[in-house]
Amino acid sequence: MEKAQKTADALPSWKDGEAKERILNFVKNAADSASKNYIPPAERIAVFDNDGTLWNEAPMLFQVSFMFDRIKSLAAQNPDWKTQQPYKAVLENDHEAMKKFTHQDFGKLMAASHAGISPEEFKAAATQWFDTAQHPVYKRPYLKCVYQPQLELLNYLRENGFKNFIVSGGGVDFMRAFAEKTYGIPPEQIIGSSAKTTMESKDGKPALMKTPELQSFDDRAEKVSNINLHIGRRPVLACGNSDGDLNMLQYTAAGTGPNLEIYIHHDDAEREMAYEKHPLMGELKEGLVEAKAKNWIIVSMKNDWKKVFPD
Amino acid sequence: MEKAQKTADALPSWKDGEAKERILNFVKNAADSASKNYIPPAERIAVFDNDGTLWNEAPMLFQVSFMFDRIKSLAAQNPDWKTQQPYKAVLENDHEAMKKFTHQDFGKLMAASHAGISPEEFKAAATQWFDTAQHPVYKRPYLKCVYQPQLELLNYLRENGFKNFIVSGGGVDFMRAFAEKTYGIPPEQIIGSSAKTTMESKDGKPALMKTPELQSFDDRAEKVSNINLHIGRRPVLACGNSDGDLNMLQYTAAGTGPNLEIYIHHDDAEREMAYEKHPLMGELKEGLVEAKAKNWIIVSMKNDWKKVFPD
Ligand SMILES: [Ca+2]
Ligand SMILES: [Ca+2]
Image: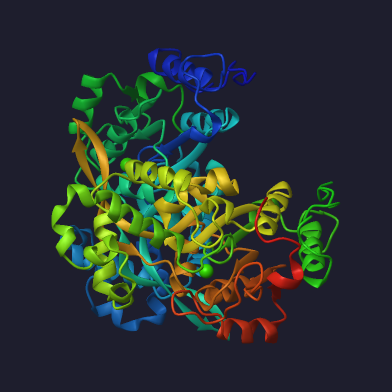
């Protein structure tokens, strides 16, 4: 008979309380073949948003910081950028000009920083950036700006036979540069926004090339479509932090068996940041209303977490 | 130290010979941490085409047979089809008319048989079909028209820590209806052609709906793009049976570590069918030339397999 892994201190950075209790109960029952809320191993699919759910996203999405730094590192090879917008604004840290960036401007910066190279080369560039860049507020590497309680949750789920997937609006190649090492989530369990790739010949060998053409913007209902495309099974646990995750949580909640929905609420102005609506980040508004109405777990970062970041 | 699982009779339906020997050696070394051809577990990614590689595809792709049968089963709800092409031809088994089907005709039949329902409903319909339909030539269920030697290969790879993926031109939802049960390959390891889905409300619950709009035609270079999108890691073993798989094999062969490329050659007119070029199936021409030039394994179904289908 299958029994849950022992839960003593499974989530040491979570304070005792309703959120922790409900998570522990759900997982314990899912892995206990004697429980009426048992879930067969193959169906233990958990999906997590990334930005603001597994790591910090403020004051700017990490991938945007990476994009700006990469534009700077490519400037020497692109002398025209000194006088051309939107590149010029990035090179000069011209925040006033940046505030006026249009979608087209962002598209140009994405193309210049994310396309025209192979996924392998891109991942190498991202890895190098993670090794060296510092978060502007917390003055620590970006990979130390993940949420310690969430690392514990991922690990606890994995130990109890869950397969964790990331389903994020972030770029899939960007996430694959760190998620295996940092979250223990292998590349084949990462779903994100993506650009089309083409097969080309490079140094006489076949290689893929990232193009500027968007393939999928993995947000809202497209998260659900991508879950179906990549996983092909309805998740039993979904965790997010914004209205962009609401469809994914609704879809999970509509499953016929046991399921758990979790919203991470950024209410910790002291240790992180308190926001529900922020011009640069996803808003949490409809999601919060529905979470309350449906008794989903709303994790207060302030009250439910002993610590936010790893030591 | 990691050692390969014992190989005695690992591939009982494979005749002794070069193909079997090379496969056994590759896997043995991949799983032996003392070997210079060792492959770390996370990198043991194997990709398989499906039609003509894992199961029979003649005289007609199984999914096309399913499509025709489904059109027939839906005819009562669509009385106009009796007088409308291309439905009329299908309902009347009018092979002369079918031969003249255009891409548009197939598109209409695909839409009528594959769209407007949820992936779950579609999978239920496919499952029911698999439970009842018979192969026109072999007079046995379609799921008994898989290749026994390939079932053994999938199992042998899995036992030695490989993660098997299907990368097929076939529809992803169609394959997910049987691949877990038949091949031991879970839905999240199946990549195929796909249609776009939309999120809708059904009986007051959020549900996905399959649309007629093509999302990906998973053939040739798109197989490689989809491997990158879904797996994010270059495979170390690739197996196919047509030129549609050539890019996938080339991409695998261009890896920097140990890798193995396998073509299944349909040369067994007695037990199955002998063809390299067939109007309805993928052609194997360029692939055969390249396989010979690069010393990839070319499996002769006639000479390398003791049996073709399971008992
Ligand atoms: Ca988010
Ligand atoms: Ca094929």
